[in-house]
Image (cartoon, rainbow, N blue to C red; front, side, top):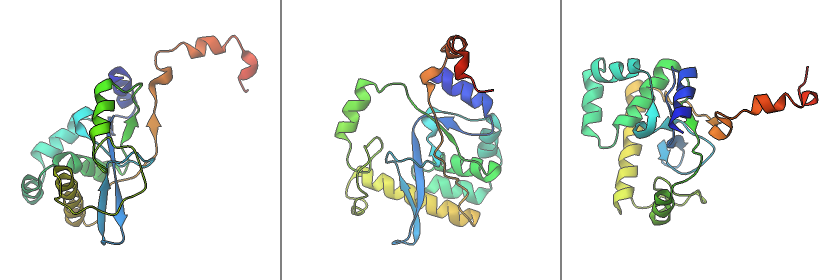
Length: 190
């Protein structure tokens, strides 16, 4: 899976390529940007804990960020990965790429069963009414990440993140499908 993700990144070095994704959306009821880690078809961020990105973006992030933006992110918890995604989207005007996993590991399945609604890894359900922010550690983190997203959009003057539905699957990675298909030339269209 890591080899596949790296080969995808080599094909798209201007993008962030990775496994766990998140999404932003406009919350009309609250009049602010929302953030979700639910499994949906839309994605606009890849968590940097399991991602490939060009060192150019790392250099922008560590050396060239304006002081005001650095102070903003330093003052907010759990905001660095959102900023990196916003920064890359602002530069490229392109969404990240999600690479799907071949199989789930047993620890991941057990963790999902323990996750609260809205936490990372939680299967999708109907959009629940927002829980009281701060009622749980997960709720606080979600609230902090929403605040980060809102403040970054304010700082940039627009929302740089770009949504996508693209997911690349390693199901045929390193498979000799092309060799096998040549046995059936009628399948090939001229």
